[in-house]
Image (cartoon, rainbow, N blue to C red; front, side):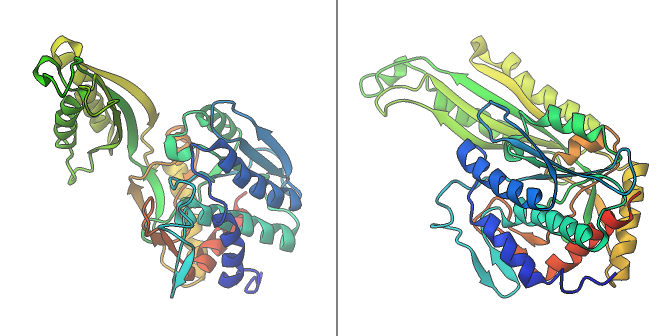
Length: 376
């Protein structure tokens, strides 16, 4: 089946940049839903049966688009998210859309609008050329991935259990597919101080911010980069006025654990902060967890099919277990065959250097289309 024109990278890029131009930070429900509207329109135009779920929890809507297959029964679930870590205004500031040779920069272009767009484009070509894929296909669009998927996880797990295969077009890991992912654990740390007039006699008070600074240094020092166990505080809030000793300070902690034993170690260490603190000045609240996704037989069989498709294009496709959590953690932990990292190649995720490689668009899209063609 020849699809050279259909997979022209410049044509793919033109469509993708329309998505990138719609800023959609996770915490802006309206912005994310503008992006969901865009994807819904394209999936509806392909003939998808649309279902949209208003979660009512401050995040955008979950979108599902269902397409029949030549065969009945459980089919393929494509999972992708449209929220990004970049606040509105990033396009007009530190990360405008621009092309420099093979690189194209833009907020969310790599993580993961590029991959989700490729999946929709691949489905478009399969529907155009063959009428229907062999198996039914459901595209599920998630609005809250970058904040740990706190509201949509139950929907993802329920939907995945109705499907035979899960394809996740998250970014490629240096050209490798993802057949396993480290666990991610989130916590909120809270320090409590004692009030005082900072300009009169701050010795009478106790700064929650100073206390938190010491806690952060302690916690982040636990990172063991060789083992892949890491602790990182990404958000901190505290204080009211410069002349008031701060009595409240909170911090959001993200931990990565590549094994079950590492997960238990992380939990024990972080939860132990509260038990060890004097007069309970530190509180720890456990947050969303992405469970450990270990490679298993069904996932490795999916990888072998993808490897064969890539080999037909003269490409060598490798795989592995990596950090950088996704909803693949949820479906993989349920032992549903899950192939992750099917998205674009590039770099700089979550930074102002986020970019994709145009040269990756055609081969990655062909692998996705090949999977939709062959899975049965």
